[in-house]
Amino acid sequence: MVSRKKAAGKARKAAKAKAEEEAQQQAPEAQMQQLIRSASIAGNDSTTMTCGHGMDDLSSLQDYCYKFYTAFRNAYFDAHKDGVEGVPECLAMAASATIDKFADVWKDSAKMEIAMSIFLSMGVQDILKGSYNVARVSAGIIRYFADYIAVHLK
Figure 1 (cartoon, rainbow, N blue to C red):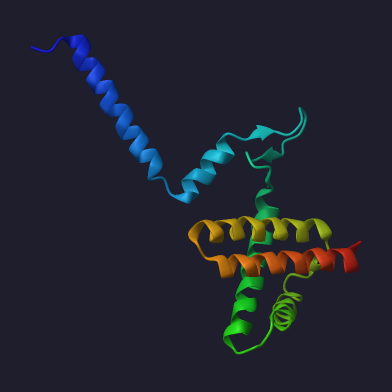
Figure 2 (cartoon, rainbow, N blue to C red):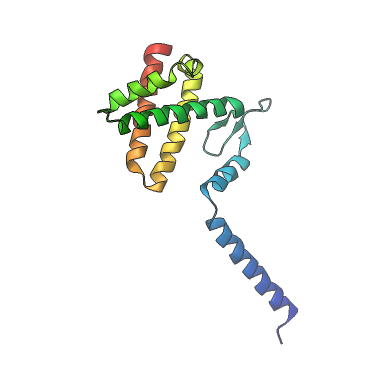
């Protein structure tokens, strides 16, 4: 006959093993949420939340810049699929496709930097997935935006 103490210990061990298994199977989205939950408030009087790796949570502004990210990225890959040769040409096509709808992003270095941060984050996710060529495109776009900021917005 097993004592109550041993049975409780075995139950704790089984629960711990189950929790560890579930933690390993978390989706990347849940892992990002966990990073955000462990965020710290930047400064005493600030309401800006900073993620564990330093990305600011800018809510609606970030959502708008994410829409810009999606539109620019889709326009870039659409140009590539349509047979446009060369990275500079695809970048130019993507820029012309988004410059009217997202003019406020193109005219504001802070919004452009948020978009760069989103491209960086998604590029890292592409690396983690093994999509190295897509990650290279994100890196090229980030460089394009950095040059654009330096030439047109500073």
